[in-house]
Length: 449
Image (cartoon, rainbow, N blue to C red; front, side, top):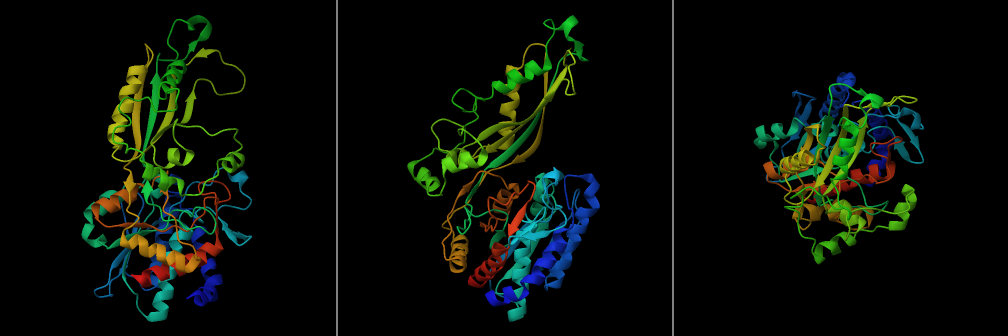
């Protein structure tokens, strides 16, 4: 298989470049046609490798691409999930090459979507192409469910999964949208934090007021907002919202050992980030804070006069964006209500607080000893010569919890990216060595099933 991969490597990379040239940015309405073009490209690629029942399924938002091959009698069925949409490329001036004109440098392919998630999704398409070419069939039954809204929190996929449980039923859901611990050290993620995003708007008077005429006598929207935001944490770095930690699992010695088994260097991290110190909830390590503990972060704040010079006003409006990462039994809707109550309780007199929930996703925990995950670990070890670790990721892939719960099947997070590949940032790239080895690993995994 390795020889076949290298024989076709140049062609595979040219095809991947075609995929990466499509600016399928799901969050920008100007790119709606490009997102549809991305869906059609995926559908054509599935047809070309012999998938059947390939369909571009319209939703209230961007399309879902489905395809299958179901002729491996009495063999397991694997549902491959991925996404063809990408993040915006801004700021463009920080890219060394144009984000939608793929470039290969230092055996890496640079483009928006290279590692998140087009390059990793393409691994599965090419793996199945090679298996089909070699045997005229596949070792397992395969289904594809590829969406174009992952980067905007998959608003339409959960209902699609609920409505099509039978069509999507499988013995495992296979996802490549995560990363190694570091170069040469594979990882199979076994935990993802849930997510909640909230917009907070504070209003006072019906217009901005002259600070000489009204300052000191009327409420100031920015003062109120800053006071509210400051109340969200205590001096120990813990979230001060009442009942926020209900449902958070106790941090046992065994859990601490699992987290500590993942290599991490505090000093190197500080140096890489240009920080004098790390910060967070007292009593927990960086890895624990970012992997198994919940968080509340202020992501942005606006209000008042933002232009050049000075405008002496008492602003009547200010806003902030807040996001939480959730763990265990924390429910995003419940946490949203708790935050909303906290903001009302701590607002300054004369101010009005308006909140809106933007994203909600439940946390998910996966069993590392499940047979489907262990076979994936075997495949990594055979190809890379190193057995993967089982980290608990701090990020969120909201649809993982939906797949696991609705389809009642194990989810295998079999990623091939690296943490250093600038996903969501300028100069996003994907190591070609992991692209080719990823194809080999997926072939090995499917054969082992």
